[in-house]
Image 1: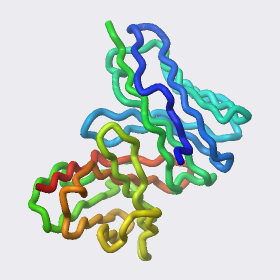
Image 2: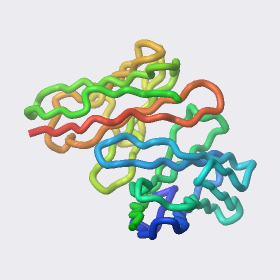
Image 3: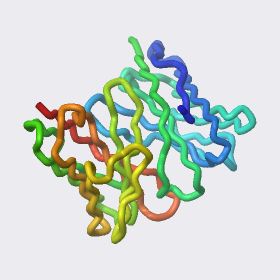
Image 4: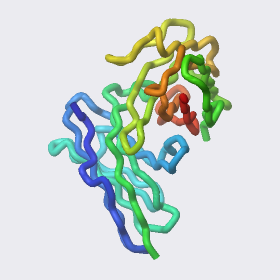
Length: 114
Length: 115
């Protein structure tokens, strides 16, 4: 049972444009959501997170939007840069604290082209 | 930022060998660390939660006698894959988070290849 889903396995975006990565979840107990970026043979790197009490969190070029009623979140990257090319994982946890286990989506491979 | 170090980065060994992987939090203390496994082109799957000073909590389907976890200090957790077989070949990653509202930070992973 995949509780966190990233339905787009890949996405190609032109440099300078907006990248939008989507994530859906089914467990209504999830209250903390994170996005990680991952390169091959490396561990995930934390990008941005959002608590369920918010619907938007912004950090530089990265913005995460949360729609609790739809159980949907998205990551916007503006403007996209070639260095953003990587696999992006959405993750969720079911406890307010962060020392709790994460459930990951299957990832979306982003390719930013020149 | 919080740094998690994992060692070794790559292991190639014969079937039947036991392999130990270390996960260290370099600049913070972590009472809880997590061990994940990732198969090619798949998601990270949580294997177990490592608790300092107590037994690890394993996810359903993960053999605790196969994957031994020791969290002897607030900065070190180890995962030992006992009597490894080719089907244990995978990418193993640990994570930890500082206390308070902090995200989990991951090590760079260990690529385990059993011949």
